[in-house]
Length: 158
Picture (tube, rainbow, N blue to C red):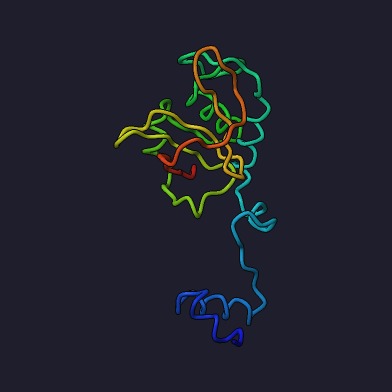
C-alpha cells in the first residue's frame, strides 16, 4: 500500500487538507507532548507552573493561600498571582473563570479540576506527562503526582 492510501485512515478529510496546506507553506505542526508544544505554552502558565513546583514540600492548610502553606486552590491562586494573573479563591470559582479545554488540548500550566457530578472539589496545575502539582489534604504537602482519575476537566487561565 502506498502512503497516499493510508492518508484517509490517518486524517479526517479537513485535517489532511490542513496538514498538507501547512506542510506546503513550510509551517510546523504541534503534536501533543512534542518539544514544540512545550514552547507554545504562555509565559504566565510557565511561570505559574514554576512557582507551584518551587513550593514542593509546603504543608497543606485549609484556607491557606501562601506563601508557606496552601490548600489546593490557594496554591493555584498564589502561583498565578506570582505570574501576574488574578484567579478567584475556590476551585469551583477558578473553573468557572477559566477557558475550558479538552484533555487533548491541555498544556503545561493549565489547571486540572477534579469533579464529582457537576461540582468541582479539587484543583492542581498540569505539569505534563499526566502529572499535576497540587496541595492534597490535611497532613500532606505540595507535591507532584500522577492524575489518579478520569473525572477531571481542564481550564486555561486567560
